[in-house]
Length: 286
Image (cartoon, rainbow, N blue to C red; front, side, top):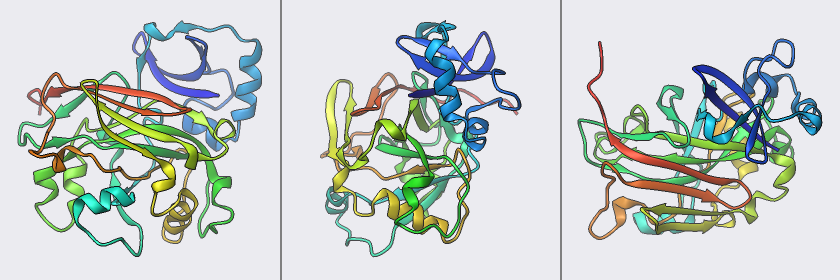
């Protein structure tokens, strides 16, 4: 099942993809007003049952995509977590997961603009697999970690490379507005029994820049979930972003940073394609 967050006629909603239609689930279940609520209430199966006979409310062309989880309580991202990416950076293989936090206000959805900020022209793409957590849990074992997964989606962890290097803590370069694209939807865990079989491909203006199978991960999804849970309790709707493979723009020769008008596609088998076009930042209101 594909779950989606979207806007239609200015109203934020969530629902299920059925063919090329969206079944709107907003207000269909008492007390559930967003996808995070649905996960917290453990109502995915109820939503699936409802959609068996429900008619689609909107065509996909009639909606604007929101980030799959518009306001997660936390987004934990992994750096240098693919063997090929470690090699292109010239670093040693990490002994522990290299984590950083991304803020929810930086997220954007499918078919929206990735924003190149006014202070830098070093905007880089990073195609990644994102894991959506479905229930609360702390001090989770590796063996039980997959019980906490609700589903999977695509992520473009767009980074401002020069700001990333301002200090050894590179989180600022990972937290510019409009740079964390996520979507287009979440595919529930039952439809992807083995995420290590997934293949990620990133295209820049139709040219392949990245491609990798998830079995190239250094730290597996269960290991990452368990590791973070020793410090922080996972909450329904939290997002784990698993890292990018080799082929990022920073290490092209010469470096290839994103420019206005560029189109980036992050495709993952069994999930779909996240599409974004790059635009320059507009002046901000105070």
